[in-house]
Length: 369
Image 1 (cartoon, rainbow, N blue to C red):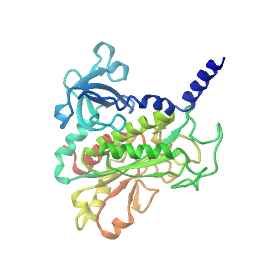
Image 2 (cartoon, helix red, strand yellow):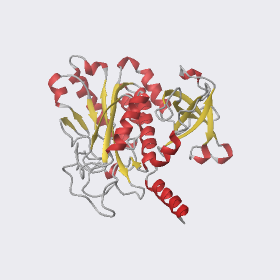
Image 3 (cartoon, rainbow, N blue to C red):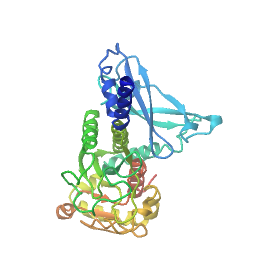
Image 4 (cartoon, helix red, strand yellow):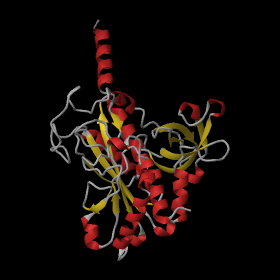
């Protein structure tokens, strides 16, 4: 009877605290790998999620060119039919692995079909082509990723079950019990990103309780999309160890609560030079002309968020202004004062693909090709 009680208690601890199981596994993490390297291949699936699997390499890697192409069953990820299910994953970047450490790595991949064409969900390929075509513009991007932490039942973490916390106000950049939730996960993710070499530039608690934001950038060209996707993978992976779910839904809770966006800061070489404000103003006209084309790739469910309320512009109308958080585009007050710098596109939803965002911005401002 005593033995069964111990087992039952252990199972309860594991169920309530998934990280406890990791303590049991920790003693294996420092075992000698005998010169071999564990490479976790990561790719983007059909619904904007991340998938991964691991292979063994014979030695440490110093260049992405040393990494072999691999494949996966695309019929199980919604990326290929069952009768032609092989989808190939081609490494494009790799990062130090903060979980396995040592020489082990995380490998970001593009997805390709067997006929040698990019998979339909491979948005990186076209974005990279556009960046290369317009490399002389020296695009810098910085993206602000908002997200919501959910309990296993899908309700925001720390909220009363089936109920609501106090009204918004004390939570944004809040400190203290009852004002912020899951800071341990946020801090762990921050550290994991720094270890992996991600250009994470900061974090903060957001307006809705259990909602946070991290920022990546500035990065040049396609590197921003690569780093943001890897940061998303790390966030899911860290939260997994705490038994918490991550939601990138742009409006996770209906009603009088802020949604979640992926505010995108954009700067070109000419915007950063003297007279750059005129270049920014010219960009506003180009963005207005293609507003609805941008909205089409700025994330699913964005119409629930872009209502003109809760610090958003209207999905049906393009607008911009200096220091205006209710517009489609915000030009920072310091930029207006300096007469050069960057602008912030506030329209993208938190679940948007950064490759599609940065790609269409380059296409719109530079005329495609």
